[in-house]
Image (cartoon, rainbow, N blue to C red):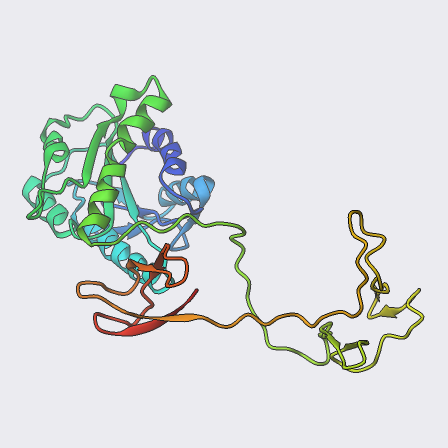
Length: 328
């Protein structure tokens, strides 16, 4: 159960925690039809659009028949977040990517059932998930400080950070630092435990290019070929005439290629003909997936020519013993 103002003061933490503007917003501790609901969707959509969308979804709750009510229970919200975090990571692995989820819980009351909360956190410990709980208002949160030191699982993982809002009310930077300080270590701990290597740093453009089928009615093939006489012809048919000046094809002005290199600084060689482009051989290396490696994980292989190490991701659907080709 959360009163309006502290919630709205805590929401600005979200930009520090997400790389996407689509944010699921769930509520807990509200009564409807005489029954207390411990997990329900806020807003008309499963995901709110940015901070403004989160605030709009939250304010909309007070315009419904829901009545804020105790007891305070996070268990259903934690279980749902863990399930969605697992699904998100599984989908990311199919595309050679990675996903990690941060659940931000803002509450004005201490949990009513500490043991149930501990079990829910234990159940979520194998998910790519960090849980940040911000306590707002004047409630006694002493019973929740155990969450900061709660270690779950065989390796003693810590996936929870509890922060009292009033202790950092004076500084947004202080509040942000307190809520985020444990997340990097938690993220690294999860991926290390799953034997998932970091993704390589992307280089060049990150624009997704979608290849579409060639349409002879709307698309123009501008591929140029060189015939045996040394003349340039278009793949769609037709030669480029000797009168190059003003030649126009599909709105493109085509200039005559130079017959010598005399006009190029530092060169006096004559160009007898235009050589056809050299087609590089398609070199591929057969890689077998080692034991203990699953789809989406990255492995190192050696380039047989340069002897340099390359990092490749195991394609979806392949397990130990399977093989796939890598171009080099």
